[in-house]
Length: 364
Image 1 (spheres, rainbow, N blue to C red):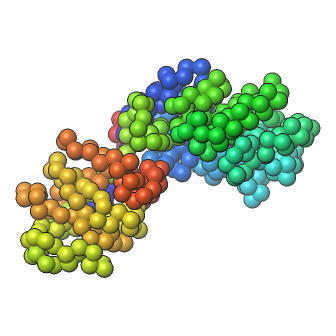
Image 2: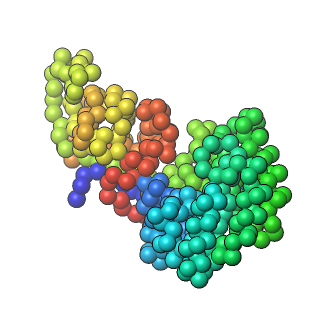
Image 3: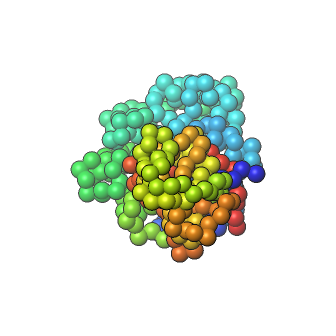
C-alpha cells in the first residue's frame, strides 16, 4: 500500500449537494463531475449523487460521460464541451446531451445522428464574454434557425459561462448576464434547459430564476472564493507518512539549491510526495503539514517524489507517523485555499493535481 492516499468523504458530497438543492429550490442543481470529479473520483461521486437524487450530471468530455454510462450511471448527462469530430460517431450511442458551439459541429452531429436513426439532443453554447467556444450573441438567432432545420437534432437547452462571477457588479459580469437574458427570450419553448450559474454565480444569485444551475467546486466542499457563506464541507483529505526522521545539526542545508540552512539542531522528516505526484514545486518553503495534531512546516525545495518537514517542535513524533497535507487532524486544519495561496493558484488545481495522483479511499 502506498503511504500517500486520498480520503474522500461521500457524506460531505451528499451534504454539499443538498446545500445547493435547498439554496434555490426552483432551480435544479446539475453537479459537475468533470476532471474525475475534480480529483475525487467521477464514478464514485456520480454514483453517490445519483443515489442522493441528482436528476442530471454534467461532464466536460464525451469520454468522461461514457465512463459513467459504463458504470451504470443512468441519469441524463450533459457534455459541456460537446463532441469533437473524432468523437461524434461514438458519442451519439450513449444517450448524452451534447453542447454545440458551431454550425459545422451541428452539421456533423446531424449527419451522424441521421445515419444512426436517432434524434440527438443539443445545448447551444453561447459566448457572452469568455472568448472561448460558443456562438456570439449576434449569431444565436441564425444558429437556432439552422439547427432547428436539421431533422436529426433537437435543440433542448442553452448555456453560457460567466468570466467574473465573484464580482456580480463588474461591468463584464453585468453585460454577460444582460446579454444572456436578452438571448433567452429568443429560445423556442422546447429549448428549456437553460443554465448560466456555476458555484460562485449560484451563491450570488445571478439569474437564479433559470431552471438549472451547475455547482462544480462547491459540490466538493470548497467555495470558489476565500470568503463565503455557503454551508459546505470539504470532501477531500490528503495524508501521507513520515518515511524517515533524523536529527540534523545546525548549519546543514536542506534539499536542492540549498534554499534552507538550519538555524538550530533540527529533526527533519521526509514525506514521499513531490511535484510528480501532485505537489507543485511552488510550495517550496511555504506549505504546512499536521503531525500529532500540531502544525509543521516544509523546509527546502519540494523534490520530484519527496518533501521535507521540520518536526523539531514535535518531539514525540516517530517514523511512520501520519502527516495530513490537506484536511483536519485534531483541532488543526489545512484548507485547499491555504495550499492554493501558497502556490499562487486556485483550489481547483490543488484538488485535481492531488486527487488524481494517489489511491483513493471512500468514506460514508
